[in-house]
Length: 370
Image (tube, rainbow, N blue to C red; front, side, top):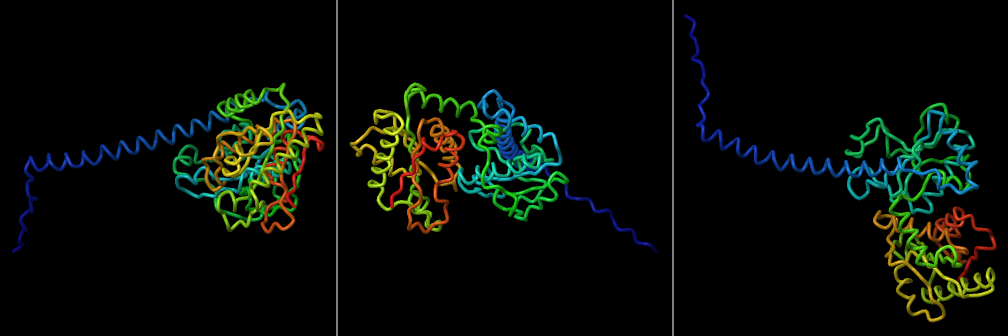
């Protein structure tokens, strides 16, 4: 005899209990959906802003002397496959792989050195990096195969943490990726044509408005202006002792000497000290000292400098870079003879100002502190 097991009927849930469960699930789903929608809109807005920054790049801004370099650069941009230079600084404030890629001076110098090498070899160059406050020419912008999803998830189709040496023999033959400071490149030149900066980058609408407004407040193009770039060092300005970047020992005494150097440069160029002086510095304490300096009037912006490890002050740094490049003379301070840090003798930021501003040697003065 075969025994037939009775069918097991699951217990019937009471309708009220079913409604209660559905209500709880609905209560969980709604906030989750709202959060996802919020994140989607946030990423969408940022992504659109970046894309707009690329699309509204205006070639008419190029200095006249840069037309030839720009033409050569864009001609080489028609070649493929490209060399992709990457920096994911913008992820540092949220999530994903983060690398500050050093300060603006070092980062931009490296960017332009790579661009110079690419032009020499006529290889297409793409940048997986959009500086905050600037536009990048569209044919030099890297667009990952992951598309918008990659921007949302902070992912790339290549290894963003790779620091492999760049095989220059493969340039132009296959797609190559390099971090700004991750590759050892023997053929990388230490110099670059400053026209490459103006060819690849330009201020966005908001930054350009701030530049124009500030220059107007400083007297416009008619007023003679001397720019002062006073670099005290990361250790002194931001407490980053690991850098050993201490360029001055006496802030007030060094500032006083910088101002005297600026007056000497003005006297040399215009036979008068009655000009407009503009100071940019990495140290808030220096700006606080200005009202106490009674020998001359110096203009500065109400900007509180921040270290390159943070992205908040990057737009302000670009503003000061462009302002200094529009001056008629430039004073900068080299490191002292007993300097123990690893920085260049003269700040790469100051050298970038000198280069993109097309300053002649007699328009620049190094103010040494001993």
